[in-house]
Image 1 (spheres, rainbow, N blue to C red):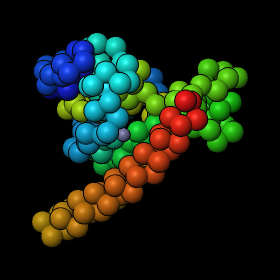
Image 2 (image 1 turned 30 degrees about the horizontal axis):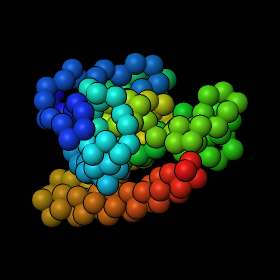
Image 3 (image 1 turned 90 degrees about the vertical axis):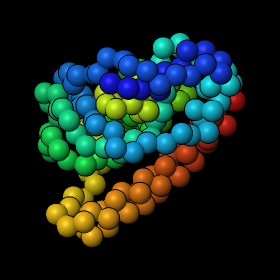
Length: 180
Ligand SMILES: [Zn+2]
Ligand SMILES: [Zn+2]
């Protein structure tokens, strides 16, 4: 599949990488819409460090292509929005409502919930592996059949996406301020 890969400061390439497969508790999304965020620009300029070879991007909308064992309430083919922050939903930070600080066991980790395009491959790709999928998918109502309805549906998708994104951006910048 094609993806946007960070190779180093000011060295970003769209290239072929291996397509992910869903394991236990995971989902693979066929990405239909994603963004270039200001955060991605910081990464490319070397102002926020990520490892070389990482697929960047963290704001996806798409269709479920694969569901791993243990993910319930979703089906292949469903249109979904995936949060930029992908908390596990089960650690102490998550259970106390601090989803973006999803940590390890009992702890809290600044920006720990931000994984896409930070600590794991991100959304500027044809397919995206979603960890902890049970906690990180939001269904987008399907309203296709007529082209008029399709247009309406994509407008809803855009609106839902921008609303989520503005919230997520606010959470993210609040976290960055906290961690400074
Ligand atoms: Zn962003
Ligand atoms: Zn967690």
